[in-house]
Length: 140
Figure 1 (spheres, rainbow, N blue to C red):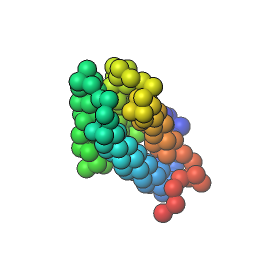
Figure 2 (cartoon, rainbow, N blue to C red):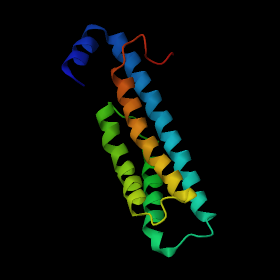
Figure 3 (cartoon, rainbow, N blue to C red):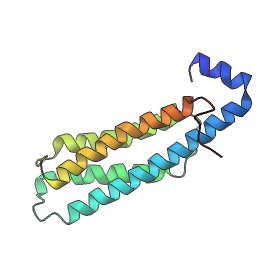
Figure 4 (cartoon, helix red, strand yellow):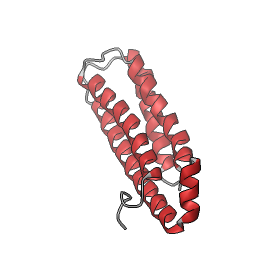
């Protein structure tokens, strides 16, 4: 939390509570979305008739990311920095998988690119929710 945000939180505790609620809502939404996208990605791989054992590490990286995201579901993060630290671990597995995948123009490859983009965008939404003015925070 930057110095300006800390001053605002001390000056208006209700505003800080609203921002924390907005942060937690965005965290839950991001985690649910990531879990859904990763489950679909794994299902796509299982249905891919052209899948090659060359890409087994990509498959394992997606399973690792999915497992990590599922562990995040039970955590209440005390700020966007704590969330980012864990989020980037799952995002790194997705990114490395995309870079290593042998068929980037296939349906799976394009879907993998989309999942990577979702991870990049979701972390920005969480940061915005953490620092949003009270008029922009999620409704109760």
